[in-house]
Figure (cartoon, rainbow, N blue to C red):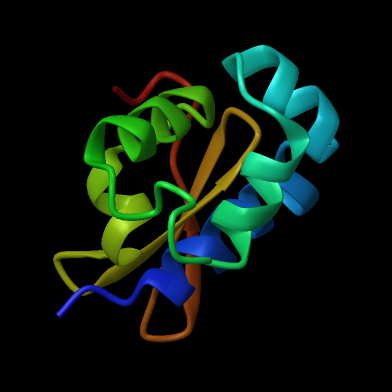
Length: 102
């Protein structure tokens, strides 16, 4: 079962803390309205939170895999994006990915 509220929280977290953009700026960049972003973050019915093409657009905007936006986890690791720096948390330990890693 998909946790739409968790997806909304991940959208808000990415926008506010990692990319530091307002709802207004994000909406403008994506061709949406500010209310659309607000409703997505709150996982309101009718907001498009179940629309994979809309979520894929948001994942692209944050430069992250759709899977991470949907589920927040991959292979036992929690992925967090800090701008263009990726840090992985595993068993409570943080590991930095070298800049030249692809």
